[in-house]
Length: 330
Image 1: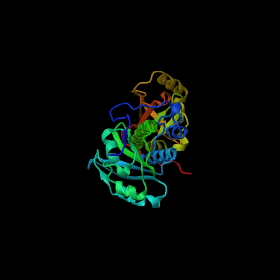
Image 2 (image 1 turned 90 degrees about the horizontal axis):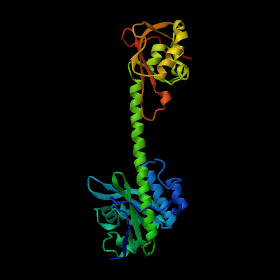
Image 3 (image 1 turned 45 degrees about the horizontal axis):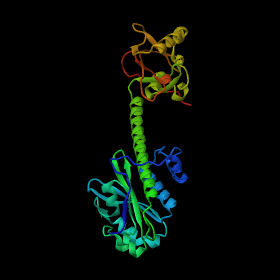
Image 4 (image 1 turned 135 degrees about the vertical axis):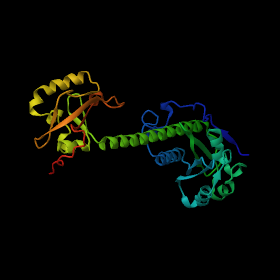
């Protein structure tokens, strides 16, 4: 068997992380100014960037990504490549695309099974490299690879090839171990961002489609958010209310005291009905008044600025969804 070297990283053990000052500038550029994954990306783009980066840094002409097919428990081509001289490597690329490898089989399988980077000095003479004959045909010599490790485990394996036999480079294996973990963090960030966007869309949909008029104001009483029912109830267009103080909806007879009442509530916010026992009126855009029931509530939502955490819910006093004249048109 050809000379084979495994790195120190495993799926369940800590990866030896080089100091940021030891990480080449090109790699710091990919990972961020602190040498750690700093911004989400799609998985395909993160993989492609890492492949290109390692090939440029090593001057090795061929890089490829295998992904793990959990249903079949095999590694299959992710069809993500860095290829120089495509015609020269065409047969090897074709053989790789058609290949599926079990854990422990071939260079990618050994990387996946061990959770470590692996270096083969010459794949053409390696008894556990199933593409050795086509590697010989295409003039491929050394190969190495490393796992992409996220919080979910090993998600993919990257492999790289040189045109001649090359002895193992321990420092390079340490570096690519580090890259594999950092790319895994990028995948985690991308998933977290995607999940957050889905949650925000669901919450905004619920807010927008609520049967009652919902208004969110800051501690100064400025209207920050409102839903469609607020437009129906008040006759105002959304763009006419956002940024205005809530007093724009208060009848003139109650306007003098309202700012003081609002400040008192903002100083000690709690869930309650507004104006208990009183008939409340809301002033619409056309100057007409509509009887309403209003509930007040602080919204203790994480990641929401405290100054935003006040919400008012309004409905017509009859308890029925009010369908007043539509919001004014330009």
